[in-house]
Length: 473
Ligand SMILES: Cc1cc2nc3c(=O)[nH]c(=O)nc-3n(C[C@H](O)[C@H](O)[C@H](O)COP(=O)(O)OP(=O)(O)OC[C@H]3O[C@@H](n4cnc5c(N)ncnc54)[C@H](O)[C@@H]3O)c2cc1C
Image: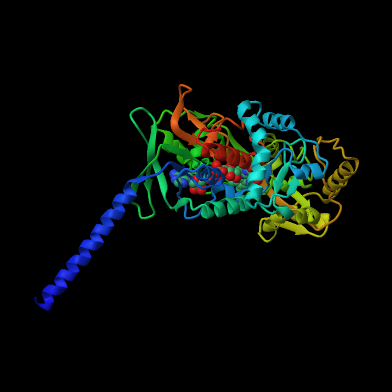
């Protein structure tokens, strides 16, 4: 045989092996079988995936972005836990009933009370679970609308979201869960009977493949990152900036559109009162919780700064020129490590004296001085006779002083997929859709008209875990 022929044979063999391998790989990828597919790797999806893996199921966790975390990674202020050891240490008297009452007041009683009670009942178990995985949730504070401090975050007031994402991702990796980044779920497959049978996915190369699974958990988050969507569901939000991740595009809506899944409360979209006027960046509620106040361009306070988010947002929008500043001092800054992020940005004004800060805010110095002196007195006497502020943590007696111009911005979608207390998706006739579960911000009904700060992370972890148990408990 000539050398030329030998080379031709070798090339043919290599080609057959390569093409065969490619076809096998494609077939395998196009026909994957697993027990559970979780769509979305935020707090809710990762909690579901871990719980399902712990129950012995094979899990594939899909994430459309090149990284995990979604809106969860942006969370700063904290997660609500009733009856934590930190409350005990500080002598804070709390109860599930008090917490449920705060949630219902905040939600204007349009919440599903059974789900709210579930949240309250499962909160200390959620803390133990996160704690056992190595989460640092040891700093406690108060947020707007709460009767008592019960919101936990890492020591020194570090942001809570990155800590929760860190421990959940570490556990996903340690458990060997099949996490597929840049793999976007594009449709949910069902049998003629209506039972779930899998998910259609587009991978990072643009190729579509199928995962066969009898259980699908939708944990795609909300739609607050898409101005088109939030304006579609609530036209009053036209022109609003958003605090959300660009990943929050409401994919759950298109995923369930061909199914008979019931969506609820879709027009209930929360604005957060303190969003940076310039960049739409969220200025954490914990600054107000730790003592920050709001001042209008007349140099006056105008509300209880710890009023529920919807009411405080409305108060801000009714101020002259809608020009409002969040004012705090060095002591508050030091109490919250997360606030350091704002200091080096050009969104913040800073000064050693109140007069100098007033000058920069272009407000009347004497009025501003008087407002601060008054406020300090309220703190000293622990009673705000102007606006009935519910928690008076710190005076603003000493500098350095800081001010950030703020405006309400779109923050959270209360609406979404209707689920029951086992995270099972419900159809328009009130029936369970076999094999379909949902959790986190993709669901609706728990938070009513206005979510209480710190409750979304709790919701994502509690109902993510419940979803991962596939209706077992
Ligand atoms: C700036 C900011 C601060 C906040 N602070 C707090 C706080 O202090 N306390 C609190 O309780 N709540 C807070 N929240 C709200 C809270 O962070 C979120 O509501 C919560 O984390 C939502 O969790 P999730 O898992 O449901 O969704 P997400 O964390 O948004 O995760 C959803 C994931 O699904 C992925 N995904 C979407 N569609 C698809 C698809 N088709 N295929 C595959 N993957 C998909 C997304 O890329 C994303 O990674 C804050 C929100 C923001 C924006």
